[in-house]
Image (cartoon, rainbow, N blue to C red; front, side):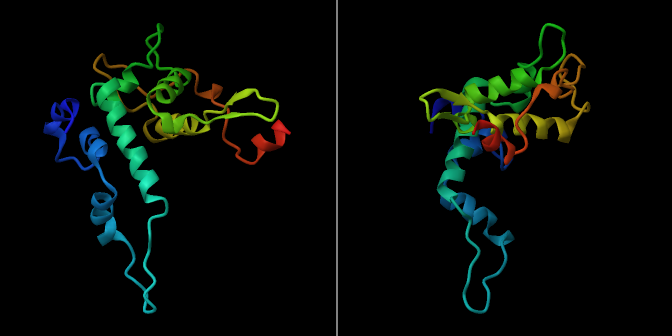
Length: 167
């Protein structure tokens, strides 16, 4: 195992700790969740996890990114989005997420050769964090980590509208 992973061994009992995410394999995740999946049907049809390898790759990336860039802590990552006003910025968190986790970079080269950045996944992630925690989670100084002052600046939510607007 990597030295950065060794430093986070105290969290190994938590299934989704950064060190566990970084070292997860397809077989380990499937064995962990198999007992929660529906039983095979009478005709032998089993429930399969679609794109399991890609999902595990993204979980590995999440764990590794938290360890390497954010001291192995999602809270540390959230604390980095606090701006000069001592209020957290949703836009800054989108930037942090896209720079840390490659799987959140929705980029493409358009028909005319222009590089297009959507960052839809990272915007939805930040909006989900905001919706789940709202004003509830406090940082070490007592301010809230998810009370984003600029949450209304996130734009990409209606999947079907983006391609219509680009045409």
